[in-house]
Length: 113
Length: 114
Image 1 (cartoon, rainbow over the protein chains, first blue to last red):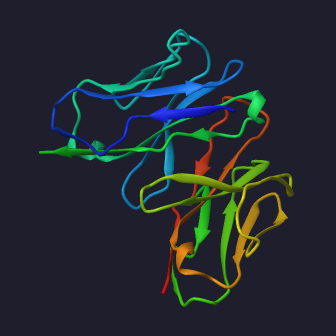
Image 2 (cartoon, rainbow over the protein chains, first blue to last red):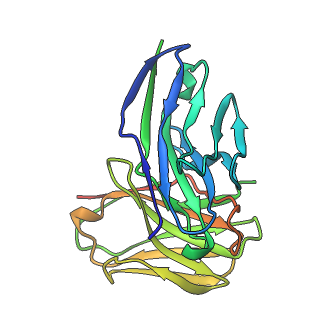
């Protein structure tokens, strides 16, 4: 079945460092891909998404490109801030899974001042 | 107005008790979900309802029973609570039938069973 694998955390960086959180997926067909963010004590919220190959989703300085050839959707940010500390979830949605969101395990990001 | 609201935010209760968590969405969505998040932040879907009908019922104990009185509400009732039920429970909603639809989450209910 469809699945999402993302790098284990926690990922600890200093402020202004470059961030990459890896995400790869397995799916039949052409899924849509998502990154959600969960700030401490809150629910998940959509950070960005991409619906077809080579699309780039972006929001709040974060970017991710839908790479069909490598089945990846890595999250990047050029300069992280302390306020980016959160748990980040990669997810996919596809017709073959009845559009149910399939989630990665989450990656905790800690940014130190 | 909060898009997806769930109550209570915190729930501390003794083993063996029965408790309910309520969820309401004002987005007009036709699909609602319950998720369980463990202490390692792993997110597991429990139930999904589309237009008040059960669509997904993952392997959860039958002590957990969802109830959807209408499209805007999906409540979760838990009987005979156990220590292992301690977790954060999230309600979410989306407009079903589309791959690129966004899910909206409530703030979560932190359940602690003592």
